[in-house]
Length: 457
Ligand SMILES: [Zn+2]
Image (cartoon, rainbow, N blue to C red; front, side):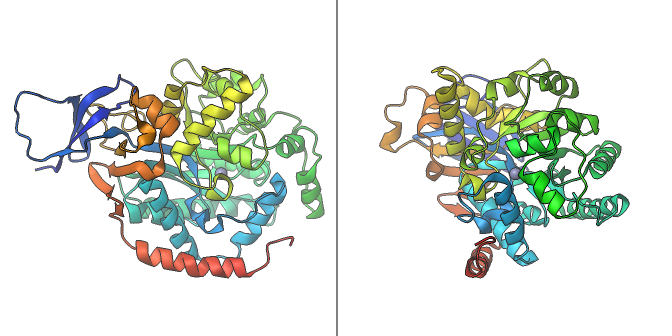
């Protein structure tokens, strides 16, 4: 018989349907079978987990992260965008495979313990999958690809990429993990390689994720072939012919945009990009804290949420790596997304608390093409559930659970994280494996990274 999980709480927040005071969520095996008000008919209460002063809601969906970069948290603050990227790349060369695995495991642990049940992660080393496997977390793992110079021929690069994707697919847990590809960005992957990756993704029906329209130096490189990135390419003897277009147009012309594409950042978009996004069905990952910390600007969230095809917006929230966001905390991400948009837009109503909660749950699921299985609590959905304790006085009084979660929600108040019907985090304890070893390896590896001078220092 399938494992049964019967949760009860003062509030159930299904997302997509109204909050239920004194509600219950029942799962059998990996699926939710019922979301309802508490029955007062004297039905048996054995097996019911009454969480009391808590909000039970869908597990959070983080649509953009790099859990393997946890080891680099706290480094590189204050650098201009492209110098930051180059310094990050230099630091990466100091880590070995086991360092990446430890780093990804600790990053995934932070995510799960803070209520995230699905992570869409771009990974160079492939260690993101090890992190997800160790924690029992759901995820879409994008194998990253780089190659702005011509030192590796396109055929060889694609061959290597296919081998790495096949290896991830072999190790992934069916039903829990999907594998995609992430050509890193327009300024780190040359056009011929981007085009071949698009063909490969089309042939195999693979999801694509790409950092796009993040910084003004990226736009300058594409529009005019000038600026710090262009200077760096020239210094390295790499030929670059600017397409003279917007980033979105450029990626569209290379065949990279479709409903399987997730575009990350979108800070520097132009009005003419709207039709391309609508036509292609590409989705957005909005990473407001990363954008702010790196000083690249504020993405036009309202534009993103209205530029897609007819229907609900395909925009999710992502933390990006902790090197730029600081933490994997999706509550912080929701709150920051709301605050900065309202401040900038001088609009006290938009986005609403419900808007950002939606982006952190069902909106993220839509962006990943997973809205039929995750992102809301309803019968037939996968039982990815989080319970947040609202006992702290910060939540009092509790008029509205959406307001409470968005304006007072805190990763430390997560009391339970359930993935596919199995509690993977409860009462401060993670059920994953290899966590202690990962922490000690990370500590040793961190000391190793820190003992060396920072690039450019
Ligand atoms: Zn990223």
